[in-house]
Length: 109
Image: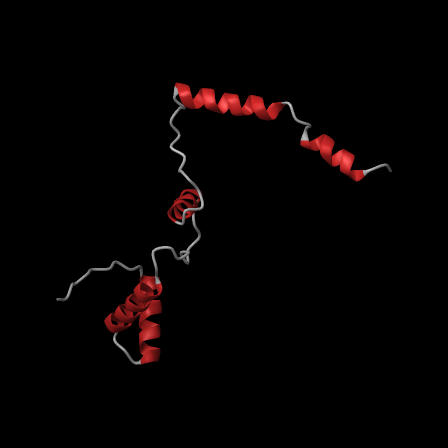
């Protein structure tokens, strides 16, 4: 079975492909096919993309890899969730502030 796709390129993109095709002695269509086939073989579901990732894309990748437990949804917390967060904050608030610990660790001057 074979599939046919249509690709829209700018003049600059096509010129670059045509120049590369001329260097390799292949038609442009064959060059594009080879590039796509190589890219698909190299790609894996958990691989890092070759393009700059947005914060959202990075978080989704971290979630898929099991490095974070959940993704932010920007929805307000429910009553029990807000109460649990407040309870945890109260447990942590009575400790020594980090700034004071740093000053203590520096020792006398």
